[in-house]
Length: 108
Image (tube, rainbow, N blue to C red; front, side, top):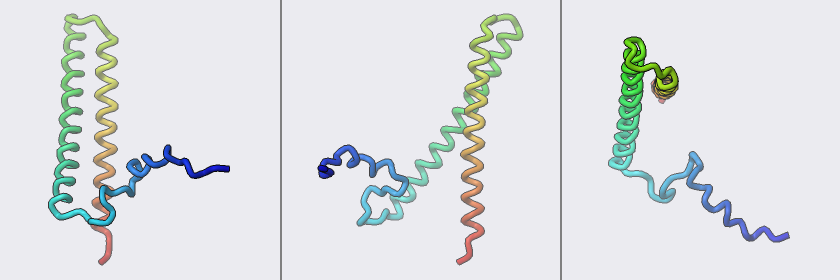
């Protein structure tokens, strides 16, 4: 039994949640700030995207109600996208709040 060829597994370390870019050198303060900045910008983008979906739903509802559009399919798709986006945003917010509470409850 030859087990020396496991090259298919070599790429899996990058998907591990414990993977760091360089395990020997810890992140500097600036790198941590950049990663937090990226996280915050990503969250703000998520909120903006959710708001855009909600605005699109309102437009589609108004068009459908006034008779400008008789395409119920587009209205339902817009409503579903907005609903899923809002649920995802709420789940992310709940995760962040829970992490904050956990950190605040830590005893040093």
